[in-house]
Image 1 (cartoon, rainbow, N blue to C red):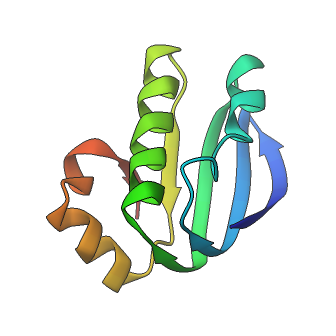
Image 2: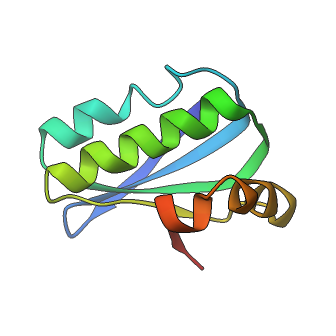
Image 3: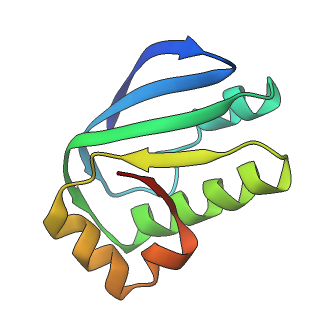
Length: 98
């Protein structure tokens, strides 16, 4: 997966993600923002695939942010991917912005 920081407003960083999420390390870059106390919104409009490792990494990072009183939110997730993640419990485990 590739990503691009698209700006910061009110202590919330916006990041656009591109490509496939297939690795448990794909979201390690978020730790930098977490250490700085920023919340993050991931725009995943351009993500075309997420496997189980990628889903697990998203859940793990969401929990890390929650533990630190910051939020990790997801927006723009393509409907087919969101539906698949819902079957895996994504609606309860991830924070979506519609």
